Length: 356
Image (cartoon, rainbow, N blue to C red):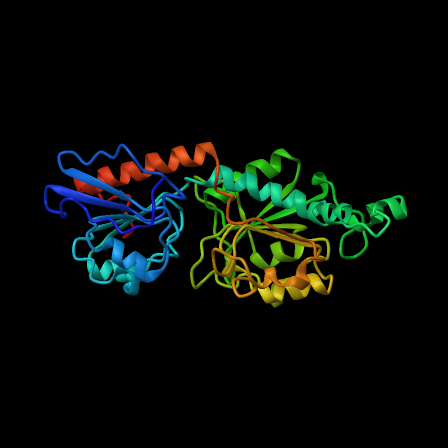
C-alpha cells in the first residue's frame, strides 16, 4: 500500500522520460503503464488532498492522476514539468481548467467510467428512501428500559412508511421519474427505471425557454420542460455535472413546486442542490424523502461539511452514503483502462479526447 510520505523521483521528467504521480491510490491503483518509446517512473500516494501536500508532491511530475484532490493555482504551485492531468472520474469540477489552459497543461477525464455503478447505486438509494429503510432500522434498534421497540409496543409501524401527505408509498409502476442530467448515468438510469415499469421524463436544462429536439442518437428520449418535470415527478434523480449553470438547480422555488410524495436522489455533486432548502422542505413535510451520495464538501463528517449531518436530521427520511456510488469491479477495470489510454495518447500527442 502506498503511503503519503514525500517521494523523490529517481530522474526528472524530460523529452524521453515521464514522472507519473498518482495522488489518491485509495481511489484507484495504477500500474502497468505504457509510455513507450519514453521511459517512466510511477510515484503513488495513498491519499493526498491538502493544497500544500499536493503542491509539494507534483513539483517533479509530468503527469498527475487526481481523482478528487483539488487542482488549483494554489495546489499547482510552480509545477515546471507538469504537462498532463488525468482524472478517473467523469467530472472535472475539482480541476481549474482555465488555470490548466493558461499553463498549457492537458486535462483528460474518463467519461462513462462510473455510469453503470452510479446508476445502480442511485436506484438503491431510491428504494431506501421510498421504503424508509434507514428510519426503520433505527426504529428496530431503539428500545426502552424493558427492551421493547416501537414495533413490539404498537404491533405494527407500517404507517411510518407513509409519504409526507399521509399516503401509502408508491409502487414502482406508479412512479413518475424525472431525470436531471442525461449523460451516461442519466441514460443508464432511464433504461433501468423503464425496465422496472416506471414512467420516465428527461428534463430539459433549467432556464431554457425552448425544449431541444432530440438528436439522432437520442431520438427516443425527447426532453420535457424542466418546470414540468419538477411538478410531475414523484422521483427525481440528479446526475448532471456541476458548473455555474447547474449550481443550486434544486432550490426553494423548485421544492415548493414538487409533489409531497417526491423522493429526491442526488448522485451528482453536493452544490447542485441547496442543502439548507432541501432540509427545510423535509422538516416541513413538503417532500417525502432525500437520498444523497455527494456533499457540499468532501470527505464529509460534520455539519461544517454538509447540513445533512446536523444532529437534528436523524429523524428525517434522509438516506446518506459516502460518495461510493462509483465503486464496482467494472468501474475499477474501466477506470484503469481509460487512464492508461489517456497516458498513451498524451505520450503520442493524440489529444482528441482531452478537454479543449
